Amino acid sequence: FGMYKQCLVDAHWPHDRYPYTTNKYGYESLRRHIHKKLANALQARERTARMKFPASQPPLQVMDRVEIDEQVIDFQGRLTLCLNDELIPLRLARATLLIAVDVASSCYLGYHLSLTDHPSALDLQTLLDNCLQSWQPMTLTSPLFTYDPGATFPSSLPDLSPLVFERIALDNAWMHHAKAIEQLVVVDQGATLEFGHPKHPVARSEVERAFDYINRHH
Image: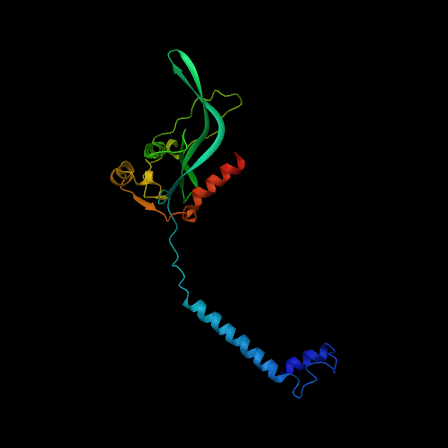
């Protein structure tokens, strides 16, 4: 209270205004204000004490957790079919890009472009095969299309042990629950499938970040 009165003196507070207009210079108001502040601080400390903070997790190793997702892409393209020596152009307005990302290294393990907006378990199988099999660059025939120097995927790096999945994080799309996917991942690879909560992409932030980069730059 003495510090409070000294603050009034230092501020040249007029003597015809509160708290000089009271008998005890606002002592009771100041006492109630301090007690209210102390009570709020104690409540905040109790709330913090009741919170359960998750234990720190050991750092992930390469291939410990792989995130996979799909995204429909709108574009202007076409597919030409040859039927009875006749070329038939078919317009393509949508395709689906499937990506696998290693969380520990933020490395793209592979991709698959499905020429439909309704991919199936076969497309997911193709993506997994692309991640595990040695990647071979395509022959680019479009003008000005070239690979960056050293462009590759981990499956094609020299002197690298065969890639083996540990955990694969997916959403709850029907094709992810196919028996063929369970056979490839769980039985053949001995890995674990993790299915996240519906409409909760935060659990697969690494692959969502990959799609965000593609959407903004390409």
